[in-house]
Image (cartoon, rainbow, N blue to C red; front, side):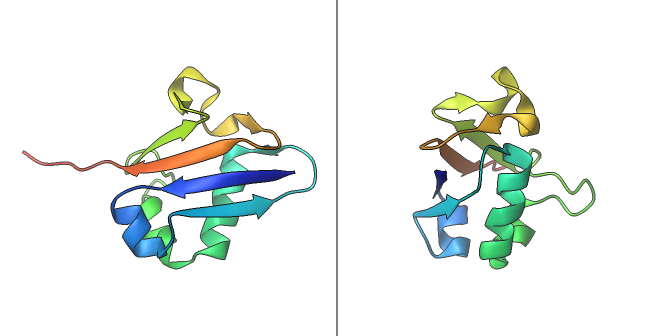
Amino acid sequence: MVITVRFIGAFRGVSGKNKLAIAFKGTVSLRDAIKKVVEELPKLKRALIDPELEDPRPNTLILVNGKEISVLNGLETMLKDGDEVLFVPVVHGG
């Protein structure tokens, strides 16, 4: 099974890539797919994962096949062959 991970904005700059194809054996949760992404692109971990919470959601809008993961099953969303995961950085300001 292969999923495609796309990077927008600052994540594209940090990763040095527009997208990444990752192969898995069988189905995989979004949480496990994110672990694999940061293994493949270690520079991305600091930008993607909140260090205190060890969770990408405070820093990132995550979409699977165009749907925000909060309307799916969050980080436990199961991915299947051909799925596309999109990481969009969340910019805070005031």
